[in-house]
Amino acid sequence: MRGNLAKTIELVNTQVFRRAMLPKSYTDRLGRKLFLLLLTVQGLGAFALITLGVMVKKFRVAPRVLQPLVRREISRAGVALLPMFFFIALALGFVVVSQTVSALAKLGQSDWLGSTMVIVIVRELGPLLTAMLVLARVGTANVIELGTARALGEVEALEALGIDPVHYLIVPRIIGMAAGIFSLTVYLILGALASGYLFAFLQDVPMTPGDYLKQIAGALSWLDFALLALKTTAFGFFIAIVTCYHGLAQPLRLEDVSRVAVRAVTQGVMVCVLVDAVFIVLYLVT
Image (cartoon, rainbow, N blue to C red):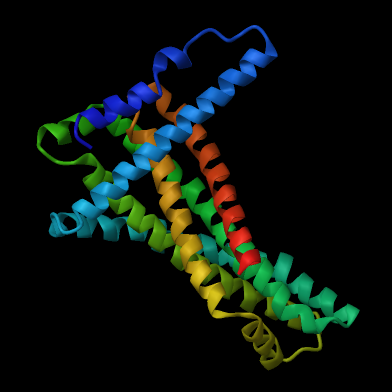
């Protein structure tokens, strides 16, 4: 991001328009909201393309500087969240998996257990829940850190030193968040399936561990593994883009950082739902 990046996105998201007087009619108000939505989508698209261009163009630039930053982001978006995800996996196994196993066993439909677990836990609930938790925990921190740096003039200082802020501040966050969401999703899925069977076993469900694992393995296919990796990577990329865009691409004051963080999390949730809907369509057509 070279000086003119902030100016370009600032023109797209002009503060004059955002501070204009609210229209009097509901139709005008709806039109204004839709126009702001289009401006946001345009700004996010431009920001994503610029970031992808920097990632490709400067892939081998300053690896000794970038690698510690990437490791730090992977630790923050992955390793540091393991205790919380251990609890979430236990809760998910108790609330969803064990109840499903018990209900199917009572109805005499245990043959559908593998397909149900794959659809509910592996395909949908595991990746989406992980993305939401990482967005709430790490995405908010991204907005606050970058917004504060922008408000204090640190981004302009990096540009004055000849350092590309996109390469230095955003690329490590994208890589770390994508790797963190993928790893935590696998951890959450395995923990939920294991703890779910444990809770079901305590309820005297007549199913051996071998039958349980056999049904789940039989319901999985190579497509599930491929789309799981692709979906979690997409979640990490878009969450990082949305949060970094709101924290870095717009000129902020310190008192605006908290408001922008709320907006970024809201839009991040919407983006995650849209990405998940796209992958649902992919599952249905393949």
